Image (cartoon, rainbow, N blue to C red; front, side, top):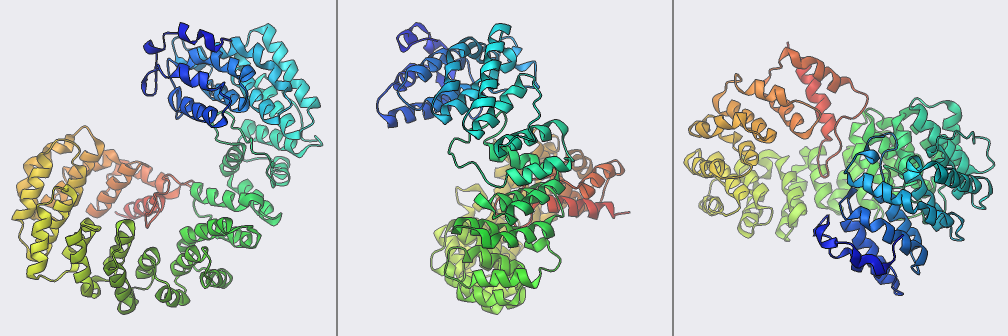
Length: 620
């Protein structure tokens, strides 16, 4: 260990951390000894930000270890947090035997320093504060496989003492985990302590992988239903918390996960554990919506606060459209929640709208909001005469940002029935409120008037390239004149920097964009994959020929955002290279979701990926 008096003996200016030279590290370490708790808290926060920035370590990280170890033993408070900083600094995958031994790596240097000071930190395993004991166990776990023989035996013995004698079951459970890091196999399913049994089951799940044996699932269901009441749910390697780790294990085996979620909900859904697990299963596995939404419905009466209730209702609203026919019990429950004045009414109403329950329309008319209006426009397009006036009123009242975008998206569902909203859309253009989507909507279904053309011409000259492009395309859509759009896109495609956004937006010009082909064609071989994708899509739209576009798009297809866009473009072209069919079959029939959700997306990307794959597979 090294005391603060030695801090100036380290050339911190020559070392680096996340923000450059590490000259600030000495003062942050000295601040750990302050009597003021706020000062200590701020210092720990700053150290996490610079020597362990979002999981990355730096040359200045290892030299800080012996000073942090000294602070654990001699600073007045927050010793558990300093211990956890040491643990996460040394964090590495125990299965990756090369990483901590990799000569010259920052993690290897940290592990070496921590192994050297660990003997001084072992007394923390007997600290009267449970949080200090738990954090110290994680420090031992971080370097358990790297200790010299003499200290390994001592550390293992101290950990075994905790496992057999600690008065707190949660500490014994942590000690069991650390013993496995020393290569020990301890049979603990018959332990009298639920926390220990749970830890043993989680370790067994990690070792075996899915499908989990019934005895293991029973332990996870019985002993994982109620979280430890403490606030020191420190993470292990590769996790944010023990709860997150358990949820991740259970989502690997969908049948086990659903079984455990159902039993946790039946036991009261303490901490919303069962309903949260169900939501994570939906994000991981396909076609489990009926089972999980049944669980969410069963969990609603168990929620102890509005936050838990809203979370259940949000899960239902996100996935209810995937049910072929939402049941009456579910819809009646949503209707009951949606009629209240509580904060839970909004997600309930959104779910009820997406279920296409006719009662939802009357509730939307009484309590319109941007998101529910957008959903109602999709669910009840025949109600344009009742919904468009509500959208107009909200836009006229000054809606901005995402709210204005949602309202304009609602208008897009109504076609020409949305034309009465043109004055509000023009005002959005005039005041630059969601002006890009307003311009697009005007171009889709607007009426040509001198005011409309004047406002679009003004927007074409905007310094905002997205607005300029949208306004130019709207002008073309209303008048058929291509020259303004050609001038705008010539400038955009000739500019430095990423151009894929602009390539993607010029498609409405179709063959009228032919003069831009000399700018588009070189981008088919651009280094950036998004640019190649957008250039191929644009090239097909302009020329009508798939010859050059299809090979570029086929090479980009994958379970990635750009791969999904390439697949969408191929579906629009209506061609699928034969060599792509095995990939498409994997997309179409995978039981796992291959793409994650995107905030505010109307359609889950994975659902679109599967639908596009099936559509392309159906082509002769």
